[in-house]
Amino acid sequence: MYLHGNSRINEKGHLEIGGCDTADLANKFGTPLFVYDENLIREKSRAYKKAFEKSGFSYQVAYASKAFMSLAMCRLAAEEGLSLDVVSGGELYTALKADFPAERIHFHGNNKTIEEMEMALDAGIGCFVVDNFHELEVLHALGQERGMKVNILLRLTPGVSAHTHEYISTGQEDSKFGFSIHNGQALEAIKQALKMEFYNVLGIHSHIGSQIFETVGFVEAVRKLSDFLLHLRDETGYEIKVLNLGGGFGIRYTEEDTPLTADQYILPVTDEVKKQFETAGYALPEIWIEPGRSIVGDAGTTLYKIGSVKTIPGIRKYVAVDGGMTDNIRPALYQSRYEAMLANRAKDEAEEVVSIAGKCCESGDMLIWDIKLPTVSPGDLLAVSCTGAYGYAMANNYNRIARPAVVFVKDGQAEVVIARETMDDLVKLDRIPTNMLASN
Image 1 (cartoon, one colour):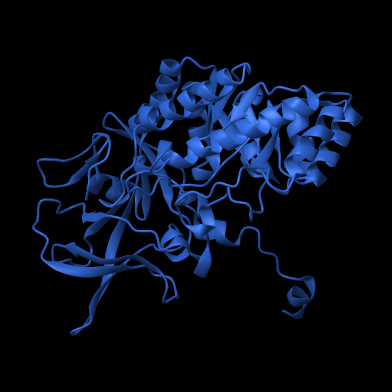
Image 2 (image 1 turned 30 degrees about the horizontal axis):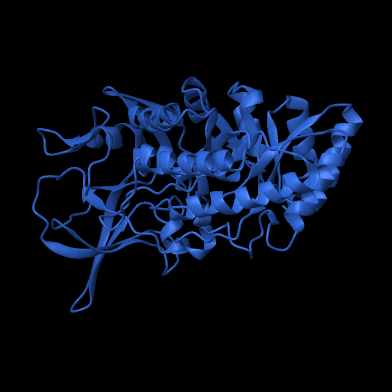
């Protein structure tokens, strides 16, 4: 298993993250357990800011909180000077409870409810990313009711499809997100927005997909967006102030993944913006981006305790852990691949090929197919790397399995930032109908 960030193998032969022995973490906090390398999250955040400082552009780096959201993560993002991208009332509420600066919050989503929009307006958030004509009308009416100008970007689909899984590719023509440039909806939406008294149209937003390892798609999106913006200027005289190019920067899950550095992602794209805009005599906009996975993904590791082992002679050896699709649904959803090691026997030689099964009552609950490990025994500790994005965020209670705890580790210290759910938590929202109570 590749060791990310501040991870190492210590003198005991144990995996150590952020100066903390994972065997000690498992003993103290239980398993499954999400372990986040806090210093690595901060390093990733700062790398994007430094890249923009080299570019010379005004910018905002907005952490895409859907990747992993908690009070502690919001505080960390605030401390690092990031903005925050939220996509629901729950994410917004969490950010506000963490005292994240409301003016640095951007609200996304293809179906924001009236209640969510009202909550965001009342909080004074910095910007809405408007996704469709329905929202364009409803949000303006809510701003009008309050007598307040609402800052907006309009999300456009530039017709660029990233090289990624179809479920996480979002910039193509056929998408549930945004206004299409190709069919004329984008032009019509911006024209409408510019005429609406209670809107302050900051600019446009584009997001072409996720887990992207090259800049070709981003550069092509900039070209298409630039052509559109020149046409928009010719039609209306309007020039944008903000160009939000979204996120989607990839990370290394396995040796087949070849992510770029923050500089390698940002500088070619900002160079293309400068080229296209200066050639057209167009004032350079502020550039916003929305990294999520690439900030927290490889900072997270999940620890599991190995339980049952099943050998089917001549076919496969299944090794079951005490978690699975309830804490990491990505392998079942996207066929995602991961690396792993025995965290308590990290120096032992890998001897056999096994498959890591989850404990849910689903044949598809498999975390890793065909991985080479030392001969495992019940009670061994398995570490699966790069689970920091869309692991806990997509966790669920299938089979009434409680969600794991989450700890941040830094300089040899570990602190719980999300407590482990209890059995009482699993039933606290349940209610027995009164007629059933009466029958007893």
